[in-house]
Image 1 (cartoon, one colour):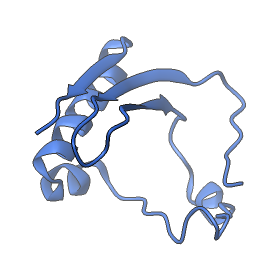
Image 2 (cartoon, one colour):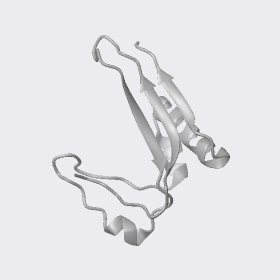
Image 3 (tube, helix red, strand yellow):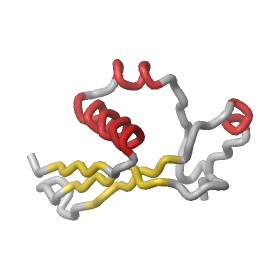
Length: 96
């Protein structure tokens, strides 16, 4: 299993709720926690379970926000607000 251990308690930044839709009849939710800033040395130690993931990507914040899709940009903006305010954000997506 791909996992990362943190010394500090991780703050809940974002909860995303996806309501059921015709092509996916089950709703789901995503939780995003603040795992702090990863050092280059910690990035080198990441080992992915090939049954779960085939890659990861670490980028500077501005690069993420300028190249993101509209939905992902909304998520990134909510994450940044949560980090700045210390309060969790919630996003809800309706069926199309």
